[in-house]
Length: 92
Image (cartoon, rainbow, N blue to C red; front, side, top):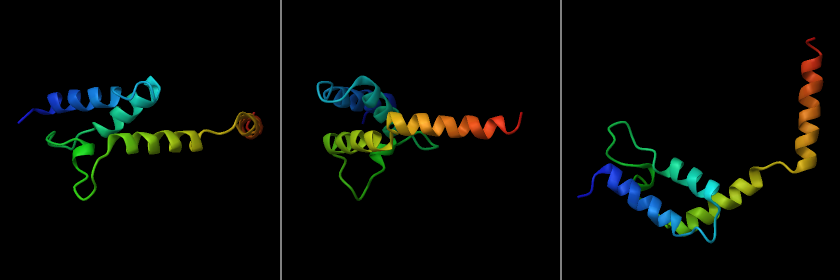
C-alpha cells in the first residue's frame, strides 16, 4: 500500500490532468482542500467519502461552478467596499 505522500502525489497528478479545462489556481485550491488529512495522517479528505464515489472530473466542475458563483460582481464588490469604508469612517 502507498503511503500518504505517494497517494497525495497521485491525486495531484490526476487533478493536473485537467489542466486544459481548469486554471492552475483552481486546481491548487482544489488539491489543497481535498488532500487535507485527518489527525492521525492516515487518510485524506477525498479518501474519507465512504458512501460517495469520488469522481474528480465532476468534483472539479462543481468546484469551479461554486467558485464562480461565490465571486461578487465588480459592481457589487465596489459597492461593498464603499459601505465598509463608510462604516469605518464613523469610527474616526
